[in-house]
Length: 259
Image (cartoon, rainbow, N blue to C red; front, side, top):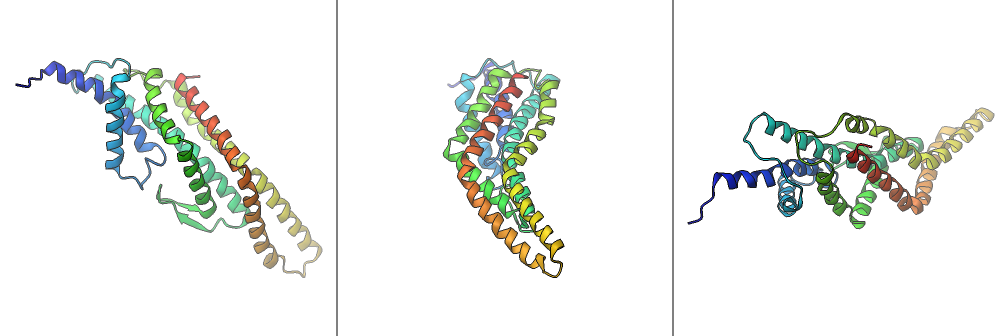
């Protein structure tokens, strides 16, 4: 008869339960997989599958002592680590959303917003266009495999224990919004500068010839010129994506190592 002792059950729980909390929290917060278009049941099954595959390869886990205070602290630490890593990837995707918002506002398309099916919030059409391209590039360049690699390697850098994210790590997460805004500004700077020159030109024309209806001419012209500038910028979009993604991965690696 198949006999399982209580000690074996505790060992199985220690091996599979602790990693599951971190991996599940990561997939609940990470882009693409953590969006509203993917059902929570699918994300949970994916987390269970990756946990079953990778758990035997992870470092030794602390013993399971039941639902005491120590176990709850470990569970909270794993959820915090997984959610923080997923949040860093969310910031990477939001760079392109924010950059598209800056360009659309300058070219007069800030009012043209649609509902983002992944996050359930309204974004401008240009940002939705950029985020769609980023998602396709992310999948085409095996970004989904990078997600799995990051969460699995995190167990080597931050093993399952009572201690988790330190104070410098939490501070680095808090100030990560600064590089999100700076990267979005660098992405939108060429188009915004060109459109600013055009708007300044129309302003000078309106002062030189007040009888002309510059608003009726300038608004559609600025919009068409903005679309033309975005079409030209598509040639360098891949290079921008590679630089920003490389910087984001380096930032996550520095976060894990507490640099």
